Length: 280
Image 1 (cartoon, one colour):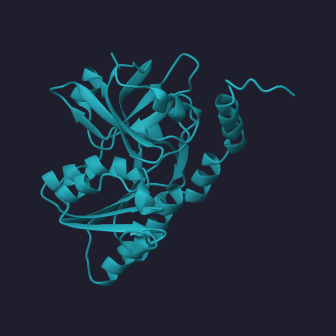
Image 2 (image 1 turned 120 degrees about the vertical axis):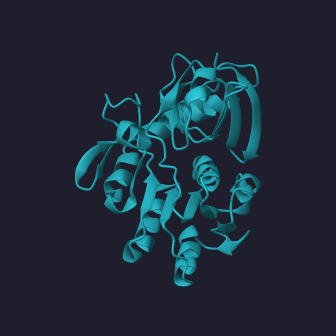
Image 3 (image 1 turned 60 degrees about the vertical axis):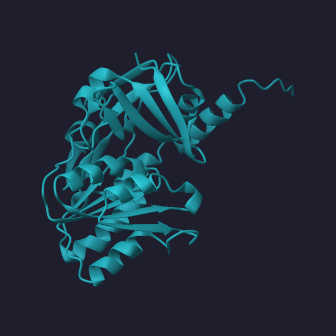
């Protein structure tokens, strides 16, 4: 169980793994996630379900190697097993016929946007997709997303591919051209999702974001993933992860995401130096 059956490098430090997990694959829906623990000493951390194959009994996960846990996960090879995977967790995306929808993926958040794009297109929507990254080398799933998009746009911070600038530039330009979106989805870094919300707010366009706060148990018991939405406390794991972007307190979310940066940096240094034989 939880055996890795395929692995692929998508971009620098971004990996895709396909894992045998038939019970999760059977119930998975767009917008949901799993909680993993790589080994007995590892922490619990969430990853969005990118794809699933009910016949094969597998799920697909994409992750950025940024801390100890994701780097540990990245060291596993095909036929290795992940100690724990719990899911599917979270409330699935509301998939229905809206009309014209815009889905925006930033960085590795593009992986989370993909199953929603596919599902909304299958539901008969006209889908406009915008994907962005710091540089062209970090763009992922372009071909897969283009397949389910009526219109497809790319934005890179440095201009190495597509629009030079941010995904919000592209969104704002489309709105100014008269695109009357019935709903906008944004998934990526909190600062990007906040910026999208500020673009759509004056136009009163329904905007949904998938939040990524610190998360531990994923079942609403620990309270680590609490966020403020509409002035009320919500738990991203059981009340989300999707919320009305115009109601989210992004300032608080960003502060909470940065609470343990020093500890995370120290943990990574210790892990990377674990085999060092240096002497003082």
